[in-house]
View 1 (cartoon, rainbow, N blue to C red):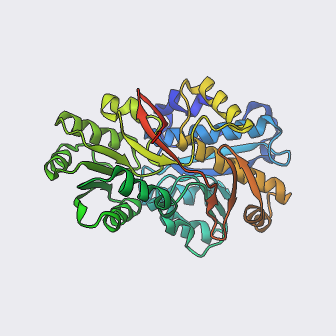
View 2: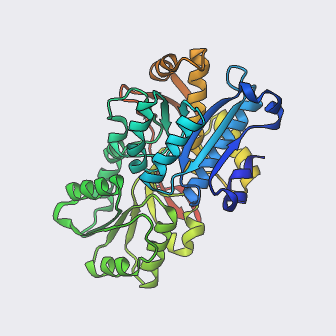
Length: 373
């Protein structure tokens, strides 16, 4: 059952999906619902749904949340603020959901926050990275992923001092996150940044951009791209030109499926992230084993963050002792430490999850592994 909304049936996930084990069907009126808006027609969206769904299954197998079965409802955001807001409004008003446990894009997250606030709901966003996501002033917003500022604290020094490029090209999607990444790279490299290219989130042809990057003479090309299909297209376009600079993907965006999507063109690409499948704790071992058994592949950070958003929210409700008391659940999130897949996390005063460890990673022999340098 775990893989029913994962990669095996991703093509069938066109609109909305609800997941609730059959063991609880006789008690549907007692269910607790979590909602999300994910780009379900893209790899990153199906990964997120599969991770969240596995959290729901593990929670329900252990007895649910305060004895209530958990149900997960998701609508397609299509990487679009308009579609994301429409999906969020449907979750909150039509489905009567008060707990949101998912969103991929920073732009979509920022667009949905006013809707969440107006309905007095609580959201634990899984994947958005823009710092403003937890700076709205509404105290019902939390985030599992690291921010661009957190990433920069360790990764910028590595790029500047260890990789030490002479010329840099930056390729960024036209989103709040992509534009901020372009700005940060300019601040880091100054005149060494010789080319910045911005493209739309649904663009498919990158031959001209790859040609411009090659023409720039950059020995380091960095990418801020949320959609792994686009990243793969960029890498293949550069490979087709025989252009082989160092290739950096902004932290948190080196998707576990990229080696399959880009093939040989992905070899050597590097990044940094908050998670490795080899993290040694009981919950992560159980998660990785269950995911591999269901999906036939090792999970990556997207699946992990989607799982953690559901998991931490469910644990906070259990601590609060009342799923109908959102203020008590908010307080539980703000004042407790949670055991999640990457270890212990807590939320700071803004709602940002803090876990401490960042891992350098790269594509080697067709897999995303830890980078040793």
